[in-house]
Length: 165
Image (cartoon, rainbow, N blue to C red; front, side, top):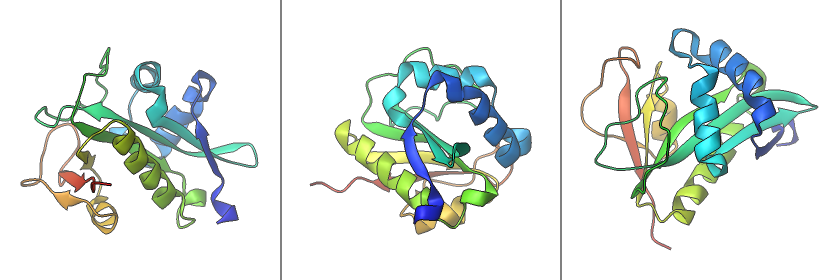
C-alpha cells in the first residue's frame, strides 16, 4: 500500500488544497473553504489529509453529530460540535491518483476509530453521486429512501453500527 500515501492530521495551511480536491471530486456539490475551516476549527481530530511525495491527494472530514438530527446541510457552518451519540462522516474525497490504493479503506478505519473514541454507537453519512455502492461495501446500510435537496438526486443517508468492544 505504499502507493496510497500517508494520512496525517489536517492543518489550516491545507485548506486551499482541500478546496481544490473538493472542486475536482465533487464538481457542483463542492463546498467553500469556510465550511472546511469550520470543521477543522471545531473538531480537528476528525480532519486529515492524504499526502504522497508532498502532494495532497485526498482529505477526510468527520465529527460527532446527534443521531436524531438531520445531516448538516451542504456548505453549512456549524459553529460548534454538539455532544452526540452518533458520528458523521462529512466527506472522504480522493483524487484519481489515490483511488484503488486502499486509502479510502484506511480513512474509513480512521473514522471508525474516532467514533469509538467518542463513544458513538454508529456512523452516518450522505452518499452522493452514486457513491452508495462504495459505502455499502464498507459496511454501511441505507437509512430510509433516497434523499433529495442540496446533495443532488439519488443521494442516500447511510449508517454503519459500531460494534461493541
